[in-house]
Length: 318
Image (cartoon, rainbow, N blue to C red; front, side, top):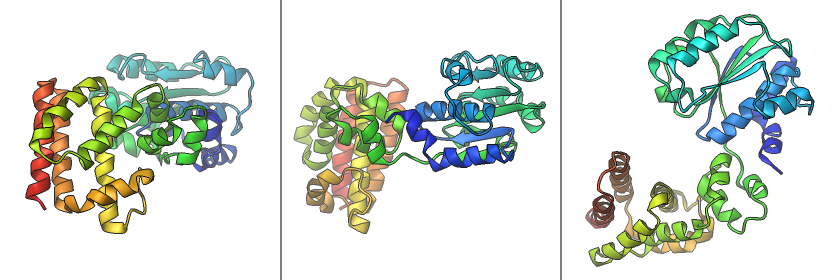
């Protein structure tokens, strides 16, 4: 099973295909997903469904869209973020008749990465698209999207993918179960993590920080271990947050929705060391550290302060 098969069998995609067959599909579609890889492929398949009246057929349209070479399926931005020039180009292109089919489709990826000025340029064409022109827009963070863009689109929140399906996609990886847990339903993220050969090491370090780091004397040792995986520090911190969430779940609902169910015993052993208040405060401390990392602060100092703050909050908030 691959990402295309999974998307085609989701309720999200099948419902949209039904709307296409009924000719009820909106001309401006906004897809919300934190998984950009998944959202990008979903957008391509949705464009194909629009071209083929609700069906996915491996015809010439299919191969051209998959190769990003279909003359009537335009993908933006060309670089990292949508620019004003891109938006101007989209508006101009939208009034040019399709070449290969009877429809023209614009896929606009990660619109939340663009400036307000680039979004503003699209407002009129989204509100009144030319005949047979469709817009498929992806967005990870709705807070960075203009309300006027949202109001002009039919909005869909793409559901996360079941862990067992992700494991099928990762078939052949000995870390499939762990990766599917870490990715938290984000298929694109799972595929990216599967390229790493140290995911077990990263997870074990995150688990150890929460379950075995007991005193400030241990901070230097843990700091050195974190520096050894510094290229994956954001992933490490993310896993630490997920482990803390699991401890919170164990405290409030007996762990009905754990990320890491295989480690339930280890987390049960330490759950009384972390009050609910401590978990919330540690999350705030982690968010502060992530902000400092994004500003390229002193890595060693940030790591050591984070570890010391975790210990301090843990004991103050007992």
